[in-house]
Amino acid sequence: MIRLGVTGTDTGVGKTTVSRALLGLMRADGLRVAAMKPVETGVAVDDPASDARALAAAAGNGASMRDVCPIVLAEPLAPWMAARRSGRPLAMNPLNESFHRLIRDVDAILVEGAGGLLVPITESDTYLALFQRWSLDAIVVAANRLGVINHTRLTVDRLRDGGVRILGVVLNETDGAAPDLARRTNHDALRTLLPDTPVVSFPWLPSHADVSSVARAAAASGLRGLIAHSAPERHHFEEGRAHR
Image (tube, rainbow, N blue to C red; front, side, top):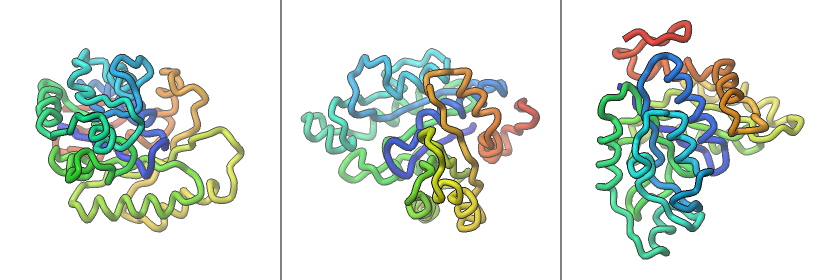
C-alpha cells in the first residue's frame, strides 16, 4: 500500500492543493485512494470550505467525514493548544482507529498534517510521531519564498533523524507575483543542498478550487515521480498508468 504523509515547512504553504493534486494523479492511475486530515483547526465541523472536505472530494471514495477528519476545533491554533482551550483534550486512539478504517480496501492513503512537522497534536505527540506510527512516506511542501532553504533543510533533517522516508520536496508558488531573486534561485539551491532528495516545482493556481487547473498542474509537475518512489514493490507508475 502507498502511504503518503504530506507535511509543510510552515502553515499556508499549499499543502492541501498539492495533496489534492497527488490524490488526483493516483486516481487517474487507477488506484483506490483515501485521504485524511487527522485534526483541522480554525474551522467549523460543517464548513464546506475546510481542507478536510477538499481532500475528501479529491479522494472521491465516499469515506465518512468522521474518519477523514476525526477532530475539528474552532480556534486557529496548533491542535494541542486549540484542544486545551476548548476543554477537549486530544488522544491518539481515535485517530488511529479512523486511519485503520480508511485503509481498508484501498491502494493508497494520503494524510495531510497541519502546519509543520513538529506541530503538537497532544502535549507529547507531533505529526512526526504520527508519520512514524502509521509508516507514512513524507512529501514536504515548501513555499517558494525567501527563507525556504532554511525551513526545508530543518524539516528534511528532522524527518531523516526520525527514520521517516522522504519522497521529495514540492516547492510551491503561493502567489502570482513576479518572482524575486530568491524565488528564481531557490529550486536550484535546494537541489544542490539536498542531493538525495528530489525537488519539484508546483505552479501558482489563481483558483485552488478549480479541479481542472489542479489536474493540469499535477500532470505537468514532477509529482508523479515522487509517488513512484513509494511502495515500489506494490506499484509501478509509468505513462500515467498503474500496474499492480
